[in-house]
Length: 597
Ligand code: ATP
Ligand code: MG
Ligand code: MG
Image (cartoon, rainbow, N blue to C red):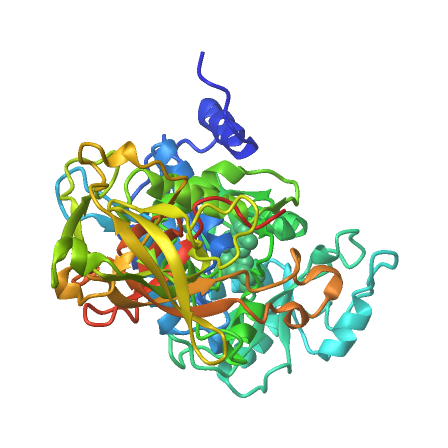
């Protein structure tokens, strides 16, 4: 027996494959729609999905769910997933976003190309809604000719008023009874550029009394005098998304048009439109069908493009790729990996329930990806000097003890890390307490601790400045306690601390580095719940920059290299600001979920 499909969309697909629902379908574009015909007939056995972003902003973690779902289903069922830019709103769309979306989808590990069995170049299943504007106008004209669409010249206000609401049916527009010939002439006028925006819209003629308001003669074309990023000034009418989307799906031979639940009420129009276009001979059967799933809601995160734009435009963050942003460029810069995002998307599943996912789930996926492979290193985030006052007496002046540590406990193939211990070093400020709290095993006067991979030291006291602030800790080394040497364990200690040498990095000392630590951007789990202004719950301390030290072996590291800094968590060298002479690391997440909840 085949395993039971893990979610309802898989059940639907398997049912459709078993019944042959989509067998024999073809690209439906007419001769002249060259881009589509070039792609040829479809493989009858496979499904086709699409990821249809509007290029009006950067993709976010919610889009990752849709990408993983659509591309993942196509992969799992031997089908294809198209990348399609839904570019029907010319004022808001830009090439910059198109490029960023291409890059984000590829970064996540997905691909829209189809290998050519004959060995030719792969077909690129990357389309634009604007590729189909000619066809869409013809479809609109065919609806007009069939008495299924009319040009309405009421004002937007009048149209709203006559649409009715949940309890009141709408009433007919005075323009509803125009003849097809009249509508054709008026639609041509709309396209001529002579009418101002808002002077007229083309509406589907369905049912002003429908219980589904979306079927009360929805607008399908409007006038917009705007330059389009692809088609320039060629058009001054643009299709509404709800009209364009089903046509795009049909022309591309999509089988399963998967979208978020907000579009559930649009499904009757999706079906109405495609069924009419089939009757009119403009598209062929079997046609696509729409299926809805619940969008991703992630705690402490907003995923509305409009709100993300506001964070950027008003300077609450430093840009779309600020490491605190839930955009894919932000998550990438923060250090999230494609494998972690894919794992996260798989774990959260696909349902019709509007649940909130804990942001901790994303961190957990990241740890799971990096734990087994990210090299280890030591870092000191909040440095305090430790002076070993008997060093010269024990080892002689100028001596440095070379130390070694495995790059990763399970990856012996990696070269070991090397660094040196000398008379002065950097430790974490929190690793010294003048008066130790109960259960504190780190440095306090009279206590012995092990310097990890190094020697045992015994704390003797500290030095302070005029304000009483501790400026250095003093200790003596305990000879013959080197880690990994015979007798090293003879001196028992309860605490081990991380450290880096205070000598120059060329001499095996710590490398000065900027360490950026991030917290949640919001203080409330549902920042925009109940209509609250999400800007009122911004966390004022979401970014902290520390000047610290990292191991000298990291001096020549390229950007976007992942590390586990021992005891501090997972870090990545910053994609934008890190350079070999100027190391900058972002903390991705701690070693475990330490944010109390
Ligand atoms: P926003 O509302 O933030 O502007 P959008 O849905 O308008 O987002 P699109 O570019 O149209 O953005 O989205 C492309 C695809 O990604 C759509 O199919 C949409 O349903 C899906 N998508 C967007 N947000 C989410 C989310 N939070 N969870 C799952 N899928 C999402
Ligand atoms: Mg959208
Ligand atoms: Mg939107």
